[in-house]
Image 1 (cartoon, rainbow, N blue to C red):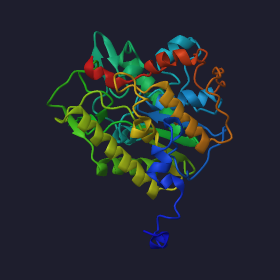
Image 2: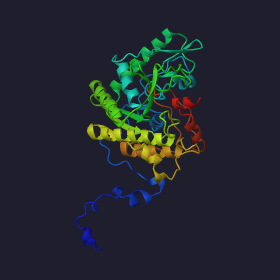
Image 3: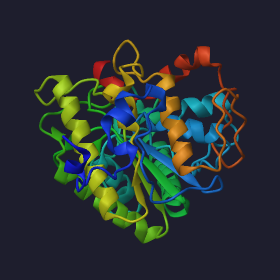
Image 4: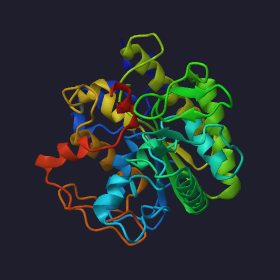
Length: 368
């Protein structure tokens, strides 16, 4: 058929990125760039906060590595050393809230920080120690008393408010749709009660699998609330590429993972289309698509290799922080005083897989 037959075809003038063969099949995995046009750019001086699932910890690590203004609103007390500060998750995220896996958990964090929601579940106890149900892993051995936990929680939520109010950009990584909820008031937990922390009670705790409508409603309410206290804030949503470690929904874990990630991806797309100064960044696509040919997952088909993380972060800086030069071979400098506690020097590429294995995931508690 002659070219004239396609003269009016609307696909003929599209950019190369619109075609699978040119932009995916004929490219090496490391050269694929599915990001597209971002609605804004960031500057290295911008206060960039991070929150979300365990994959979000990589973003924090690379922001520090590139000497960006990674915003840590909750600093460790001056009397504890670096090793202890890291173990107690200071600097893992922008405040010491641990992993935030779901949209509902993020929304309720904001509501708790501003006194709009006070959950019935105030504390879990075990062997004479006390744990915060909404961030149980940040205090590895628990608190010595309920009063100590409550004091720490008040201080923590004050720092969360500071993070929301003072950050120039919030990067949030959506991880899961499956969660466990308190039947009494709807509070959701980062880990199922009874899986390492707390006691499971079927009369109190129920399994929930959020829908697209649920996630969109959560994120919509969260963004509206965030902009009440910080009108100019930029928001970047990503979806974690890490599959579910287990499912309680009755389906095969592979099908459950597909459902969960699909819901989160659709909700993130809706948010990016409906809200200004809000962008979706395709971490999920970079790692999980057939274009990577499975090269970015470890042998367990779940843990993301550092090679994949580097691909994600190279594109993150290219599209969102173009004025920052990211040298993947350079050691990490000590962060600026306002950032997280100083970390050990960045390991060589040959030992980076060990660092990835140290990413903190409450979800692992499901299997004990």
